[in-house]
Length: 120
Image (cartoon, rainbow, N blue to C red; front, top):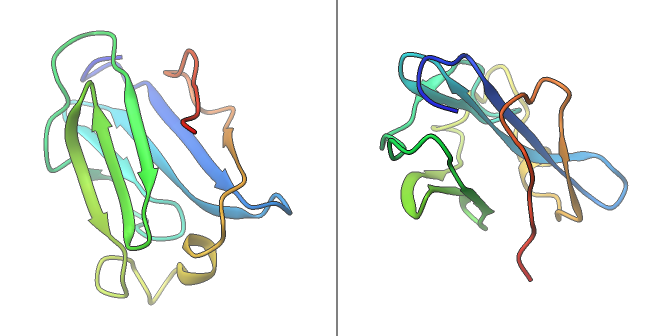
């Protein structure tokens, strides 16, 4: 998907009890923007624009400090989660983002993903 398509990637991380352990949403609007579930409530423009290629391969890695996202090998987001970066007045982000991930789930609203693979 490309900018302006209105397509979205909506992926959630789940723990072994199937409780949400974070996630990542991308919207291909005029500017590609993202949301982090249970962290930021507003769509935020990605700090780095994804490459122009129509076919995009996304790599999403949750770290001890937050989330890193690459698109076609380009680091587009390196977010450290904290009370300053997450809306701590509205969302209780810590219980969600500190759970151990055991699986992922693509929400029905995701209309941009074609396939995925996990890394070892």
